[in-house]
Length: 493
Ligand SMILES: Cc1ncc(COP(=O)(O)O)c(C=O)c1O
Image 1 (cartoon, rainbow, N blue to C red):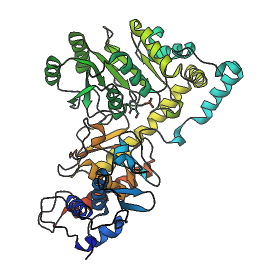
Image 2 (cartoon, protein in one colour; image 1 turned 90 degrees about the vertical axis):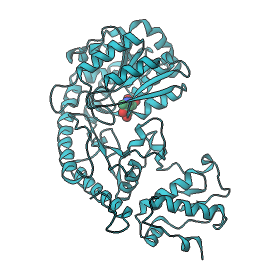
Image 3 (cartoon, rainbow, N blue to C red; image 1 turned 120 degrees about the vertical axis):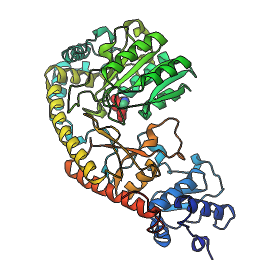
């Protein structure tokens, strides 16, 4: 009898089905019952044979792959590794579509309903208006548009940013504005300037994984503080601060990624006071504060920053066009020379043509028109997605925080289902989303993080409805997969 014929899954056992499967195949591989480089049974075939959901087989194969026992060939399937325990790096093309790559924002979305991306679909980009801005700049500046810019950024753009944000209630001296090539670069520059090797950093739990990557590049000791619906518990924060010496605290106080929450005014003010008392700097990463659908729009933490503790980052990616690679960072003047040196060492300056076009775009009021338009559109999508979630997914799923703006919903699964399992079940339904583990540090693929994030930035109303219906089906599939019989049925309808 071949290994494939011997496989049996016992539904009455506590051990999850995917782990039983993974264990038996692993035993077969290590006992040389499967030939090196021989092909594993295709996922659907094995799932059909064992009468389990394909996600169960995918998960088992993933575990084998993580251990280097098998490798994938895109389009051909999975194969037994030539040497058991072959290092993961040796396996070509295996990163495709893997959960690990999600942490770096890499995901193959072909054919899927995309609840994973946090940037607007290209059809929403204001291409015609931006064409006008580009043509104007080319006509006006000719070759000048293609020279190096000052490392701090194109001065008229810094002025336009200053006056636009002043109208929004945020006063920033033009000398403190640094143009950067995206918020990610801003985080990286701050890390280079302010984070000593191996020192402590505090982040929210969950948090944006790109920031974690930047902190890891300095081998930082990364600690995290859980969020409540209006920011962290202040007592817990004070306890952490009294026990540790953090150099930086990274936060998204407005429509946080991935939960969508906003910090309360009181907590923002307290954070600045604590930064003074405990001598740390705060990185405020603001991608979405414009997208408020209910109540007063949140004011950036920077607005309360009398002592100059907040390094404010504003990205234009999530509400405009990410490919422009344009954002700005504000830093108290005393740090400017260090910032200029770091920016120069990184890329000399951000692209002149886009800076000039963005300046025109802001000054002519096209930016405001765009924000108003996208705000109305996202508000409709927000309402549709919330209604669909409530109608089709709650319960057994739950929303710990109902946001009042932004582009995300952070959903909680029943405790026994991990975001990773749900991600795989959703992939089977051709829906892409981000499992909670991506946003938690330290990242542990074996841990059960029963959360996932949905974004509606890149999907139409119709896709939202279809996608949520498919997620309901994914819930049902997971339920069936884990239920041995009518008894012991999991509470996932
Ligand atoms: C919170 C947060 N900060 C920064 C970034 C990166 O933005 P940018 O495209 O401006 O580099 C992202 C992108 O997802 C994000 O969600």
